[in-house]
Image 1: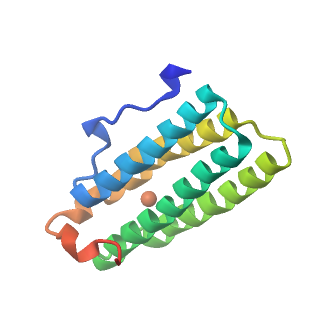
Image 2 (image 1 turned 45 degrees about the vertical axis):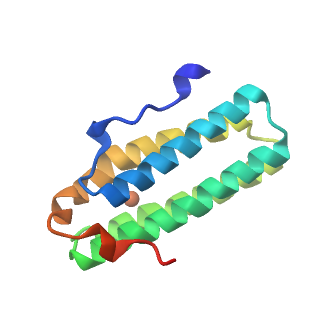
Length: 142
Ligand SMILES: [Fe+2]
């Protein structure tokens, strides 16, 4: 189980401290889900952990989308669609989980795979557009 956890690597950096910190937060939340699996948490607390990961992901997606719009990123629409598809997939997984058709470990693995692939492939593509943009302008609304 231990080796399912993700260790942050600078190779994941997209060149913005704000976005990197949010990605680190998502990695941490994914690792917490694996910890929950090890401890065999109750369905209810596992569900709470999923919900906080999803609401954090939504805040994070909104931040990235503001960055992309501000920098006229050409693949903005495509990237936004990936975020929307993710939310739909999570809703489906949550339903499966509630119906007893998805074990906590499956959900944690799904989140890990999506996150790592999304950061390493799709997020990396907007990285060159972030140069000269100040993080402070795009902090999530308080
Ligand atoms: Fe993204």
